[in-house]
Image 1 (cartoon, helix red, strand yellow):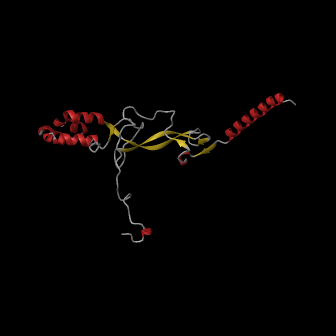
Image 2 (tube, helix red, strand yellow):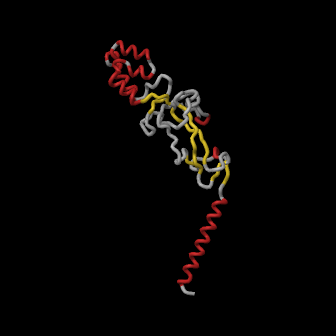
Image 3 (spheres, one colour):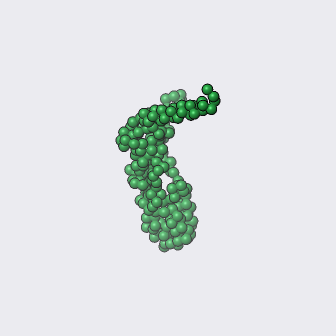
Length: 198
């Protein structure tokens, strides 16, 4: 046999192996509870959907947190890895609860602009929901402009936020601040294997 006649035969064998491997991949789909998938076995949020609400710049459906109002949760559509089928939906998508910042419409940019230009009259504090401090700043001309300067710094650093405990509306990839809290669950307690380290 000549080499030229072997080439079509080799191509035929390669094509038949490709079809067999495709059939084997179809049979490899695994049906699982997608809430038990590990990191790397899914993409969350699903890149085929836009989960960001344009008004709040957070996940759509973000609810108010129980202990800290600004630390909310939202149900987001996720996508399982190729070959994994979720038993909840009978396809590769499922919902997962992710943390989000609950906002109530107060914009960081607006409050910072009010503080810089009209802070001496207390309009920044009225806007954020602190009418008592706003009235005091109005009567004292921003505590002789020192209160205005202090509020510019505090609002820019996001130390002073809205009175209802919500987070500022900041662009999704903007300069948001994450507050780290310590309580009895996170406090460093002495451990048995420390062997009297003082």
